[in-house]
Length: 200
Image (tube, rainbow, N blue to C red):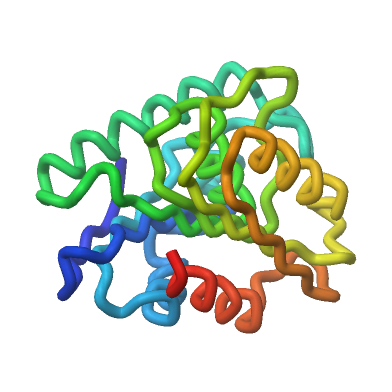
């Protein structure tokens, strides 16, 4: 997978896994990492799927309708890539915190839905529920921050609330942050994510 890796100055900090939204690249969320933690490793990944020339992490059938088969395949692909990257770049595989926006937040949530130890935690900006009707792994000691817009036309507020309850039901510690905005990523929600990250 196309990616950027930047070694952090503090090896005890989590590695930040940056996952862009539809049409983004591995460059997009680098400024967020600066705000969240200047000392952490950064692993920023570009999605392997193209939709009308726009990179994504998995296919969809329509707006808000995921191609479940491809989602499962791409989630495994990303999890395997994290295994390989931890070995290649010599960072702690058990200490990865994802920072994902929109489509990137959805694949990060999918990692947690499918693999118990894929992530230590995740900062999910405007996520949806990746899959329904499956049993989640035990997510005790996992930490999740969800930021959502009350007027988000792409990701209705009930999606974020449902994701919150599913993750909590699996044992994760979940914090939800609301913005009176739409689907855009705001500086105030990134600062709220940075405050959450400090307490991990």
